[in-house]
Length: 251
Image (cartoon, rainbow, N blue to C red; front, side, top):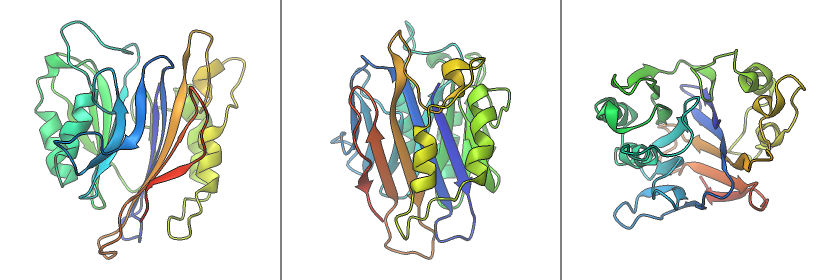
């Protein structure tokens, strides 16, 4: 159950802040974000070594795209394509609206259900593909904080969202200009949950069957007025070995 948190602040120097925790089987090989695709030199994203796609990335145009499985759809399925391809498909575009339109027109039977977040410094969208017989829908994200995991956007019945949505809303927002990401970094690292919720209520967890939070990421997109300033992309691994936060891209 991966999780993405999006803070939209139109008109701000940094109008889009995105945080993400990736939950996956620990034995599925991957590489940290980088320029892994020679035919897509403008893309910086994590690489899923099994299917060669990605779960989260940005491009040099200032577009961010991330994908999450919906409940009950972990892993590949016979006859269906990897959902990680869709992150690369979105990152082929320079504009969030164009990228969302492209994803809306995929063959819905070719992919297992997913949630997807696509954003630039002007627009942001939640792509919902809950039924393989119906095309994905695209919903614009309003200003403010939104959070999504394996269900619907801001679905407070989801234990992780119920516990952590108010905590992210109350925490100090990251300040990419000063380099202060501390409040959100601490929240992404938290293992607090309840006996009732178990791992599903924690932001970060490890289970006995090898399913765990394997990495965290923080991304900030600069506003239109900040010409020449790059997006910021920060990353740390938790599994199979914990690493410190590092800047993949620095604004």
